[in-house]
Length: 453
Image 1 (cartoon, helix red, strand yellow):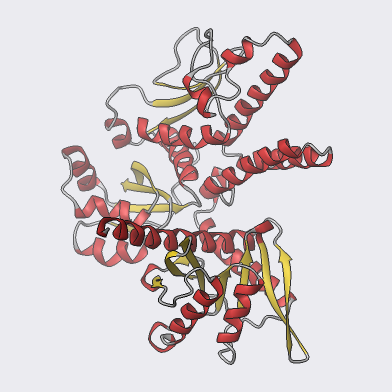
Image 2 (cartoon, rainbow, N blue to C red; image 1 turned 90 degrees about the vertical axis):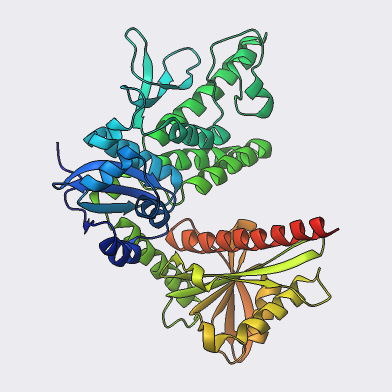
């Protein structure tokens, strides 16, 4: 077997000083897979939503006996960054299956590893299993996974996008069928009197199973392409309800796996994550240059978002990305002070005025992204006149970039609809983080006001 991990750069481990000086500077706060080595061979493979936080826990906390022994044996650590929690789970399972590291196997409560099983039946079920039982037929087996918690996490994400059954046929719709997580439910399908409708619903169910199998194989991009093609056909035939449902599936799939990368790509190129960040910045810079937006470099990007509920507890967030990565030391919350709390434009004006007061101590961004359309961008442009900081907006409808175009001393705001690709991934990731950060503070203020009343 080819040693997939031998070329990964490794960091020597000695609990204490070496960890603090080397790993804390190196490890990113992103999703990924980490590997502990002894004698240049993996002895434990794990996944993390936040690599720095997860690996830190091995050195900062009191450990269980088995984990303490593993850390004592480990001589080096390496990691592979990925784009999402789902990708981390799938890559972890693939690497564990390839290497069967000593401490992954020792950590099992059962001598058999855990798998995801797709049964070979009239209505295939998606279930978990410890081993392949003799005489049972399967469409596919995936794993092993380190824990039942990881398996539940994978299946929970997928079930919301592609509902499936985990039960045998029965006389009536299951509980999950009532909340859309087993849809169409095989029990309901079998109860249909119309044979044509029964056939159509069974095909719909089997299509969900095929998509799940393809995703678990790491071919997320293939599923997305198939859904897009089907959505376009439905739209072309004016079946807008079906097209909208497919659009929702695509958006959910994008949310958990954006951008989509086959697991083998991460194995073949451990620097793929960094390469993608450079590609994103280059593509965004190319888009801006088409409209003569002058950006000397595009290393530090700030994004602003305003949140309020019917004018109550208005807040704004500023998130900062450096080289495509969130730099949380530069995140800021703004509690809106002005009286026109329902006026987003007035709130935006207040926020950028307060931000200008800190250019000297916080530093200046290379680019500002405003969550909103032409009105929000216009406010920022007026307030930043003379600062030579480019400003663009991101309107949620069709993910449209709002770009100022200067002609003969006048400004016109043009709209550019992003094609799918690296630049769109970057601005969406930044905008989504601004949303999350704004909502967190907004909810905190609302909770505080409720407890005070």
